[in-house]
Image 1 (cartoon, rainbow, N blue to C red):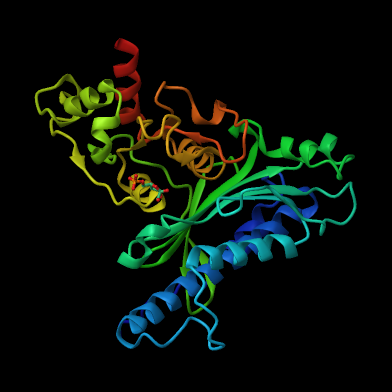
Image 2 (cartoon, rainbow, N blue to C red):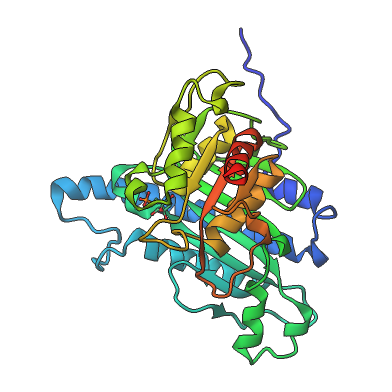
Length: 354
Ligand code: P6P
């Protein structure tokens, strides 16, 4: 009988964290507490989305079932996911500050015991790409994590002092990750020592290590950008894309085939594909979004950290490294070009030679 070889030594995210906690900056296991709260939030959001999607589908026919039996008005999934995430961060006892795409102001928790405790500032977009949910398109949760600066601990009372913890360069992140709620639920995470990919096993309720030490392909002729914004772009961007599509252009001499277009309109899905297939993802500035559309703290920073750790690059329209940038406001935006090194280098050469 063909006995299916069952892997009896699987590495769950929980085991991975314990086995590696000495490596990444994990003061007294507090990062472990934070990561366990994070993975719970991802599992809960994943389940909520899938349940809501099913209920929504039933809703379409019956118009009677709301997401909860008490008949409350069905909360939008992005509000629900934000509440799930906020409660998980508040209750883990090592998060001092939360910045969320859904919350105008920074949130300060008083659940951190003792001033000498290592605590964290977490920035997140609980459901990035939520406008695609009704179309069944993959959405995700994107997270960046900073350690609270010791010098801001003394003045717990002064929110302005605490805001310094999240108005710093991307190099200060201690970890970054995203969960993607697609056909499966995937989690890509970095602690500054490479990227590891996990897949949620719904029966076990565990994230399983499926793509250890993931590296992005060095080159792939795929570009991912919303060309519908073309009339609002700087002329040079149209020119660069023209080169990418021209089979005879200098850009394609080494790769022979012109670039093909892939755009989902959900950042997590477009970036996830870029990690696995390679190529370029970009959201440049345009006349409607003079500073770009994507947010620095909880979209550009975490994706740039992950991309660089996977051997890729992440720069803004001017070719500056995303991780070198520093926000002045928690919801600051940035243009972004991220992906395979060879492909991003074509953009950098193009703007340099201009
Ligand atoms: P556009 C989704 O609304 C989002 O914030 C990102 O997930 C996505 O990459 C981008 O905006 C899509 O924007 O203008 O192309 O629809």
